[in-house]
Length: 211
Image (cartoon, rainbow, N blue to C red; front, side):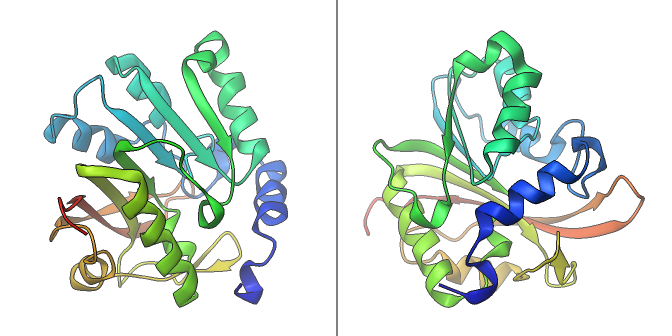
């Protein structure tokens, strides 16, 4: 395993213990880009959804309000998930929560939608990237969706004290080409709570029927 990423769990728990959610660079009161993609792609309310690296983000709040009934949130940080559960209160019981490193995740079910905003780009080592793709291929149903947001090739070179892997449309498409079709991609800017601009690439893929 890549030396810099050997103890991610401790790193991310320290990050989450260091400040309130609203102060993190990735914070948005609503994940408007992701929410709009669920609408544009006409994801049915019965869809089985996995939010990878969801932490204490508000996507789960938006999905619950929209009427989605089968949501799983996976994050490496137990502290992040505890924050989300406290925020949701009784509604937290409507969500399945998994504390795990996505690189070691062994799905016991198949998902209609795999959503990841700003987790995948922390994978630097080739074997970690390949492992992520393999798990996503295994977890997403044929013809299911992969919605992925990561730093674009002109985005930040690091985040939260860790280096990141930046992507252009062609490189992200080729990374997942083994079992996902050519994606639709677009670029968008995220404004951090301190006013900095981060350039993001969002792509949505379909799981191939074969492979």
